[in-house]
Every structure is written in C-alpha cells, then in structure tokens.
Image (cartoon, rainbow, N blue to C red; front, side, top):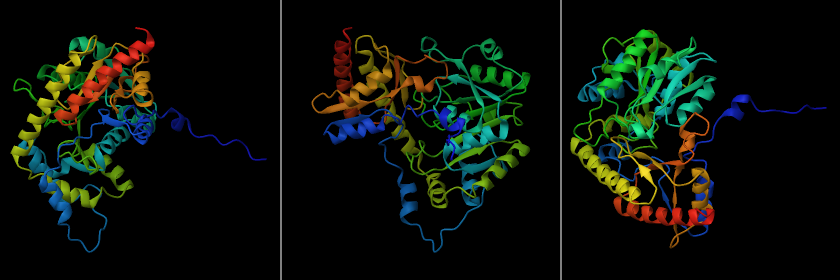
Length: 404
C-alpha cells in the first residue's frame, strides 16, 4: 500500500508574501465591481524611459540564443559606466548580471552561507529576504529598528549580542524597503567596524539609490567603505530605477574574486539571465538625467501628500521617508492584516477600496508590526489623494464595527 506523501519542511516553512497574498481578495473585489487602489506593491505608474522601450521595439534578432552566464558583455560594460557615474568605481570582473534583484540576494546567500548559518537583518525588512533564507536553509536573525527612532540602525551592541559562530553576514537595504530610511555615513561606518572586527560580510541592497528626496540626505554605497573589498557585496536591479519591474534584470557586485567566481558558478547553473531584457537595460543606461529629476520630483510630491493625509487621520502615525517610495504607517487597529482583509472583503466607499500590505510580514520577530502597514506611494497624486479618503472611511467603519 502506498504511503503518505509529504512536502518538504522548506515548502511548509516558506512564508507567504505580505505584498501578494491578499491578491485573490483584491481580484474578488474587482469582480464585484469595486475599484481597488493598490498601495500594497512597489509597482510604479511612472512611465518606463523611452530609451528602454525603444530597445524592445527596435530589437532585430534572427535567433534569440543563450547569452554568457555572467551577463552580456556589452551590458556589463554599460554597468561599469553607470556605476562610475554614481561614484562607484568598478571593473567588469566585479559584476555578475542576475535574473532580477531577488536572484542576486539568493546568490549572495548561497555563496556566503551553508545550511544552518545565520544572517543578521535590521527589521522591518524586505520580505523576500526571509523567503530566500528559507530556500537556502539559513536563519534570519532580526535586529529591530524602531519607528520612534526614525528606523535608524540600532546601536552597535545590539548587533554584537546577536553574533554567533554561525553568523556570516549583515544584510540591509539602503535606501530602505519598507521604511524609506537612508542610512547616514556614521551608520555605515558602524557596520564597517562590525564586518572587520567580527569577520562578517556586508550585503547591501541598493536598488533605490536614485530615490532620495532631500538635499541633506546622501546615499553611501557599501562598495565605497574602505577596507571591505574582500567582504562587501552589493545587490542591484533595474526594476525601480527605470520603472521596469517586468524586466527581470539585476546584478550582484563584489571585488572579492573568489566570491565573484562562486557567483559565476551559481549563474552557470541557471544558464544565463534574459537576453532581450539585458539589451533593453543596456539602452536604459543612457536615460537622460532629467528623467530621474522629474521622477524624484514626482515621488517627493507623492510622499508629501501621503504623509500629510495619513497624519491627518486620527491616531495614525507615520514618518516622512527619506528615500525609496514606501512608508510604514501605524494604525489604530489591533490586527492590520484583519483590517486589510476587511478593506477587500467587506468594505467599499462610493464603490472603491484600498489594498495595503500588512507590515507583520516585514518582521521576523513574532508579534512585531501587527498594527502597522506598508504603503507604497506609487500612484499619481490624484489617485493617492482619493485612496487616502477611502482609507480614512475604511478605518472609521472598521473601528466602529470593532466598537472602538
């Protein structure tokens, strides 16, 4: 008699995305005729630059073949030029092109850790860091950044007490997703000290470097920290820079040649990153600077509108993010996921509702973030303003239902 088949422990442990797991509820709301404002996912409505779109339209290939495992040589050369333009000096040997930024994080985990090893990550953090860790059989050890402290990095002793013989790396995003934090030179210096003193790698996700809104704030790359060439790893992607989330092209960068060779072997196992999208990303490197100036101005206006409207709602608290295009908002509810489900399943205001991402999924500490949501300000200001009106009515109705 056949026995019972069980899926792997990895399959059972893999967390659902807080960004995407409520999508079926949004689909059902739309099927009922309710308009849904999507504030849950970092999918901008900003137009992809014409330089990139033209490359798709003008593609002239007879055979769409495999490319090099490390990325098209012409694209890697273009990336060297791009990074020089943002103050990061690299050679083509330092860069491996990946299938999106998520594969870059996956390669970092796979090359730096063995099953059972640990990585320290300031929380709240991009949820895929945890999912990819499960895929690799490693443990995420959170160090909690608090909204009361503007999501600044916790002090050095808070990191030190978490370091064990199995700790291999500190992983962070800068600018931050989901917080919008931009780390200072002093905070990066503290991470540098930890890496050198405790023999750790630093893995920095820098995909939002173009989106910093105030002149006083400056992006400091992990690759420009002195003395870290053997232990600094940078993850990047074209998804947000060029509003091209569907072009699954990222890269992983290190000056450590042994580590770079490991990345290449991992890249060979999946053959190559997508050829057509690399060609488009290569063309996007020549996007005019005024495109980014206009996009930053647009996001700054959205940020200011969002934070102003959120803070005008009774008992709602949020910080003004310095970078990226997200904020964490604390709501007057006990369970933000229940509230998010309510918005999609039971509520509408004048035929409209809002989808947000429950923030608990951006924490590894059990119970953390239960009354918070991540909001992505990726809609135009008119839609964003309307979404805030709908959210305000939704909160009032939900709290009335709960008798609070």
